[in-house]
Length: 322
Image (cartoon, rainbow, N blue to C red; front, side, top):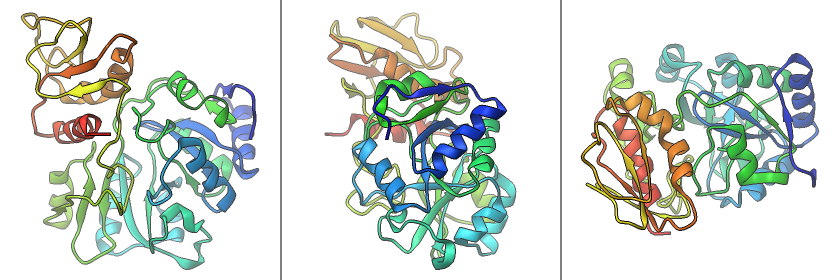
């Protein structure tokens, strides 16, 4: 791995070919998806996958998501049934990850799945991410490009600030439009289970394949990323359901807030109360408020509906004991 500051690559044809070559050589490359920036490594290389865990300081019992450019590529690494085919046809490319039985002949690193016989796989819907996957020519393991448990990155500078020289290059694709990690749906068993809420809503999936259980999660034996009790956490503490902020706190508000008082710093997820805008701003605003001298970030209530389910999931994990 490079010991220099990561190279920032502007995503032209030459840069994409270079990034693909770096991945094939076992290096780590951060790249944009529609959700957050991913820390990419060759999913068929035990060394590259181990480097991802080392760069993030991530527990090796926490599986990674494998990114591929299309459903045909996904079917080469995982076993699809009728449910998986229907969901993939409807939501891919897009912010949905499927946990399926891993194909033994796929050649994936066993560390990708943290010893499980399943694999989490996704087809991202971002032109730069798509171009990189095609340039690399192999499945790419890519958790969020940040220190394990910290706030996820939605801009190239977030990656640089969090990982520095631990990544060889960053494909700069601006700010991620969705801003929250993918929905994770486990179809490896008879009953579908929602492991992590995200931009693809549970109700949308249920209209296709019927009722879905919601996992309470086992943080000691997760089946997918995003199930650890403490996750997405800034340095400052996070206080939920706040109606205002103390003098040594920052305020993260939602909806009209002109009568809300207090706080050293203040940002609004969406003045109009738009949950899509709030999701896109969540990690960016948490990072911006996480400044020296801020003891805690006080967060106003977010409705537990639509994308608010995923936003509140991230906030509860950010506020969990560390």
